[in-house]
Length: 345
Image (cartoon, rainbow, N blue to C red; front, side, top):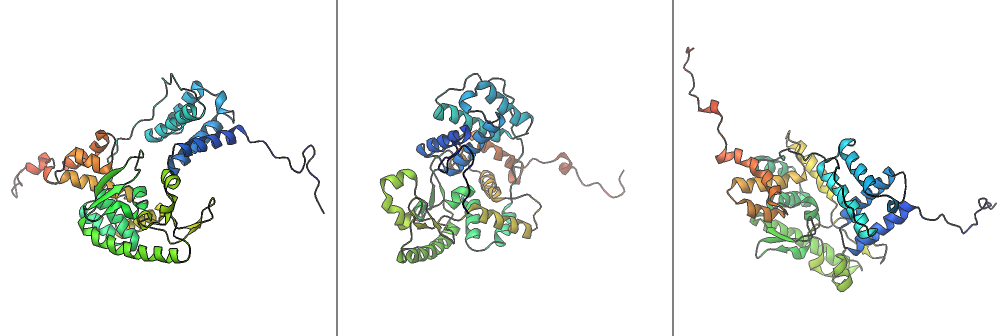
């Protein structure tokens, strides 16, 4: 028995898109045109959605500086967001008005600013890092060793391609790191042979994928447009591919993505617990430990800044807490006192 269409609407009628849906579609389209990363797209879309919700669903084109100022201030004063999250929200709204709506946001003075964190980063000693890595196995262990040995971010390690590893020069090229900038960091000598053995296994897997009509890999948008054929090339394959394939919606190709960040995050969490550490160590702790170890080793702050890919040296300066440890440690006054003799008063 067929159902009658709702009163006042024909069977082919569709609800017109809401102001939010239209805005988000334009935001995504503009982000794609700017070739910004999926993580940036997800973050910006999320902040625009929250902004529209805060405005009770009103069209952002009808909102202005007053609403933006109130929204950003509430994030700090009411929601207690960190300074970095508030800055990300500001960047998202700046992008919305400047690049999507074609309007400038001016006179944003008076926004309540979130207080920057003064926390010292969690750092592992060499023995602690070794203990954590010893409780890991396979590709996750190798990836964890790269986070610690090369100072990579988690996402950078997951997105390494075969061509980014230069075994002759012992260098790793990080493509489109934070801020969409490339940089070069070191490929640890101790990891070179293990990486080569790992890649031999990856190459066999890729050869099998090619033999059954697979083997395509995601490419950066500009490369996909200019040279789509390289999606099958060995050099463009992920250094740490996932075990499962997925079907690309646009092409119908069965592709192998890189290993998902949560895989390594889970393995590190388990290893930290197994190592008996009380420090709240994460994947990013390995990067902090890399920078601190270099600073303690006497390398200058500018070199460390370049290896980490920090835009401003002030960011790298957070690791100067290491100067209070090791050979340069500050000596407590009580440690200079002579041991009192037995019976002395």
